[in-house]
Amino acid sequence: MPEFWEVTQQVLGEVITSPALTEKLLSKPPFRFVHDIVMSLAQTYGFAGGLVEGAERDAKSFVDKEQKIQFLEKIILMVEQVLGSKLAVKASKITSGSEVEKTNDFLQALARAARTPKEGWTKAEEQVLTMTGSQTTKVSTSSSAVDKEAKEMGTKDEPQDPSSPTTPSSRKEKKEKKEKEEKEEKKEAEE
Image 1 (cartoon, rainbow, N blue to C red):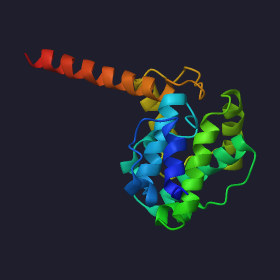
Image 2 (image 1 turned 90 degrees about the vertical axis):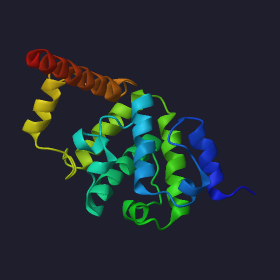
Image 3 (image 1 turned 180 degrees about the vertical axis):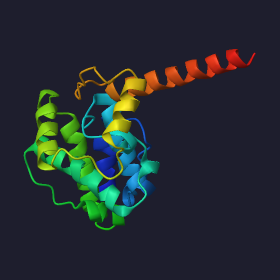
Image 4 (image 1 turned 90 degrees about the horizontal axis):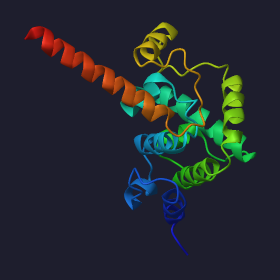
């Protein structure tokens, strides 16, 4: 009989290539690892991309346990909405590293949800945003800062399609391109 983490390794391995799904990480998944899996699914498929806002894209921006719990609660709700069933995992148990088998069950459910038709994701994201009061977690920035970031990246007035597989990476690429152009302009001005 396979170890509990081996099933997770197989199921997740069918939908993502990174992060590495090692025994060490799966046998006691740290928050950063779970976050990286969520972000990999968001960037590759667009799954839950509409729920991950601003600073939440960077695992380093989570400075306390409450922020991590709020982020995970949104993702758990999303998976529950997509699959139509309640999960037996608690965000607080994921962040504390306890109940690792339930955390692995959640990761398997996350992979299954990401493989469902994309049409259901948008509705599920809307439901989660409604259930959470359409509020971002404490990690997110103020709306004016988000608007400024969106304007700088050229996405402020663009409709966001959370089912688009390139939405998060496209914004990142635009931001990187803009930063590169600004550096080049600054360098030219100094010469």
